[in-house]
Figure (tube, rainbow, N blue to C red):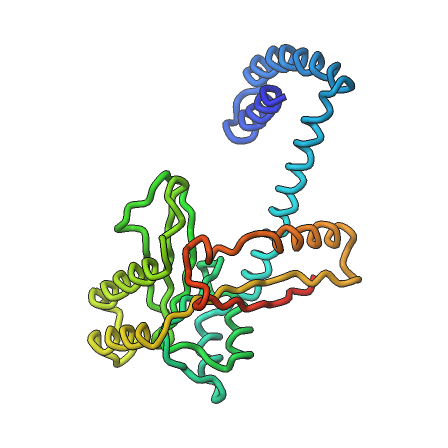
Amino acid sequence: MVMLITTIMLTLVMIIIWRTPPVFVGMFFIPFVIMEGSYVSAVFTKIPEGGWLPFAVSMILALIMFVWYYGRQRKIEYEMANKITMERLGQLLAMPEVQRVPGLCFFYSNIQDGLTPILGHYIKNMSSLHTVTIFVTLRYLLVSKVDQRERVLIKRLGPRGVYQCTVQYGYADNLSLKGGDDLVAQVMRCLKRHIAMSTDRRSSVSTEEEIANLEAASLAGVVHVRGKMRFYVGDDAGCFDKVMLRSYEFLHSICRSALPALGMPLQQRVEIGMLYKV
């Protein structure tokens, strides 16, 4: 069946992408589909004799992967539709009840174009934001390994003491950093280098003062904040969404957090929950 599916998919590629003339498509498709179809039809005779078991296992695994993919897509769509812009962040920090508390905060986010909506939920409920806040996104690239010089990318955001950090990994890189201090030290080193080399001065703060503020925040304490957005499936949701999203919530509840995988100390972890009504 893998060979037959590959033949069908390649035929679609020839028609849709390569724009191959129909005569050549037929010359490829007809002989292969006859030969591979014969093999598949012969295999189908073994289904009543126990061949149904691998089919059942495959269908269960495919269903689990589809449920996870559907739930992740709905979550990303919500985050992109409700992301926090730099203007909105400035408005939140300008509210009189919001204070900048001492410390260094690593705020983990799944999106790079904008900030996670959990940030707005966090600021409204906590009425505070750390003096230095770094929004960290783990990004997986389609390469085996990422060079150490390109591992951490830093960008200064609008408000004072707010930065964006992208940590890039290849599929053969080890995610574990053997202790949270390694990630903190690595990001701090790259951030200091970025501040020293940056010519984009968006405030009156000098380079020396900005680095001093960064070191003071690190000494005051480090905290790793991770948002945990959950779906609230109401009774008015469709039957398909009820089944798929409730199944996704079950899978998500038994999924391990990324912070232990990164080796973050337990006493420095904070999880912020947020409900998204479907």
